[in-house]
Image (cartoon, rainbow, N blue to C red; front, side, top):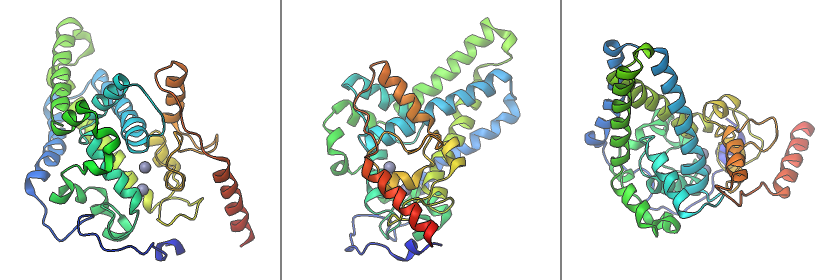
Amino acid sequence: MDSQATQKKVELPDQSDGVSSMKIDPKRVLPYIFIHGGCLAVIWVGWSWFAVAAAVFLYVVRMFAITAFYHRYFSHRAFKANRLMQFIFAVWGHTSMQGGALWWAANHRHHHNHSDETHDKHSPVQSGFWFAHIGWLFYPENFSTDYQKVKDYAKFPELVFLNRYDYIVPLAYGAMLLGLGALLESYFPGLGTNAWQLFVWGFFISTVVLLHGTLFINSLAHVWGSRRFETEDDSRNNFLLALITLGEGWHNNHHRYQHSAQQGFYWFEVDLSYYALRAMEKLGLIYDLKPVPARIYDEAGQQKKARIGK
Ligand SMILES: [Zn+2]
Ligand SMILES: [Zn+2]
């Protein structure tokens, strides 16, 4: 535990924020039991190279939606896009089954305002690893969207609609997998897949791995890794987490400067989402990617010197 853990910001109590003494709502645990339990159906549907490759592909494209759109765009406004692209970002992100873009962004903005303090909804330092990882999702006070925290996007009715009916896109996603699997079985039987096999691999297995990959940033990225910046929270930089989350593992960088489109601040900090965002910028799909200011690099240099001098 480094010294930062004992130097939290002093803040006034805020009864509306964070986790209170309220109890877990079993109704909210059921969807998580459903998607985890659904993975067991692999015993009956088996596997094929196509289904496994589809699950990996769907993990990567949906992790990109979480990191690039839910996180960097909706939570931090790290780049700009037109309204149609913005809508596509939201629909794409909804296929991850991690709630609406506005719900996700509101909770995440709350995390940055209260990182590792008592009101943080998911701090492993305050509440333990498992609570920070997944337990916080089961508490009633974390179900609704605090639209006050996302006023900038809540003015778009299409985003509010998707957020309110956040099951529509996942249902369509599941139906698409079933339909595609049935078509492939009929027209390309050599692939060895079918409707239910593609559904189990794409809807359950891929989504559960994606969920935990994302949640590791709330849990592991606040306890495991190195700290370039002496931030007031316990955020860490972690290469392995950066790989599995396409760049989110540079979490200490991100907590120091949350507004930039990149989270890997140097060429050796692999940030696949940022490279993809640069490609999208070249294609004219997004614009105004926010850079890391020179003063942040200066600060990194000073802190490195200070550590060597110790
Ligand atoms: Zn964090
Ligand atoms: Zn963030």
